[in-house]
Image (tube, rainbow, N blue to C red; front, side, top):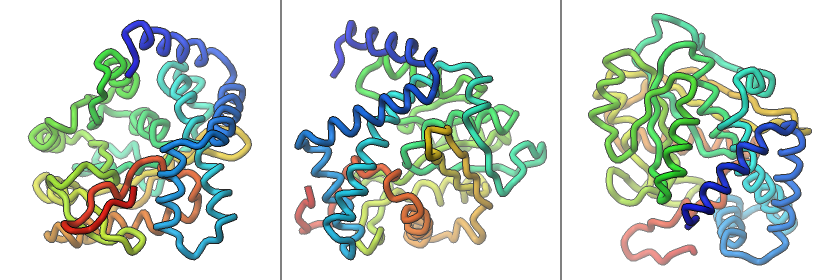
Length: 294
């Protein structure tokens, strides 16, 4: 955990990097990721474990290639927080391409949950979708262990007009936002433990999966619109991909709705497997009696 002085230095470094050309920052992050991947670490083992579980048909060489690329993407994403948090709106406009299957500026948009997924570009996508909506929206965030860094991150993520609230305080606030016709962003594809979760398949593995999205959509009479932040090749920036609302969702059945989310991910991850957040222990919580993968 960063000390108070260390936190101030880290924030100052991010602000400094935000003044540099994006391509330079991205290349520096790429190089640092390559270097760190050469050092055996717990995170590197987690990446390999996840890839082996999800893609058992891959050769060792294929897994090694994707793991190396992902490590570079993941470390790079931390340095790119500098641009995403502190660069000007004009700079971000040049870096983010919006590819949306719905009209994000529709003033008559029904109550909407914007469901983000943990690809390495999620930060860029979540911040910029505030701007693309051209209206006040709202977002849930996962609290950090460092209060000072959390405050900076919360301000940066909401700088284009988003109301922010912690996941711990979410249900009542989300329903109020939906009644006010504010689009609400949230992510649900991480392992948050057994509470409000069920075990459904993810690449064939029983996986602890949140059920909150379907229940919030039902209670708020909201449509669910998935979106993905994609890192473009050749250091060109990002693509914010916004999909059509899921039809017949929520179904009214928590397990069916959780399966729907995981099935969507199973379609999207193979399109850019190096960009999904494999450094996370996605299979940390196991069904009773089953051993840990990690």
